[in-house]
Image (cartoon, rainbow, N blue to C red; front, side, top):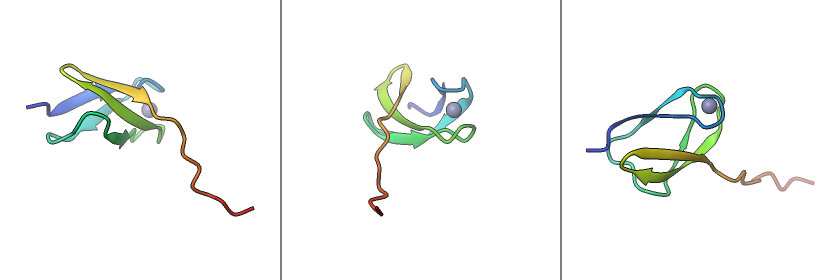
Length: 58
Ligand SMILES: [Zn+2]
């Protein structure tokens, strides 16, 4: 199982990783709110995900 926590690359907080997490899945850090991409599962590696701008209101 891959359940556990990983360190947020942004703020070094423990980020809870769901047991059924998949590679390339996005999780968000509870501390700083950063979107993190799961780069590897064994061990769990997190990387900052590129920010996706969903606000097109211009
Ligand atoms: Zn963080």
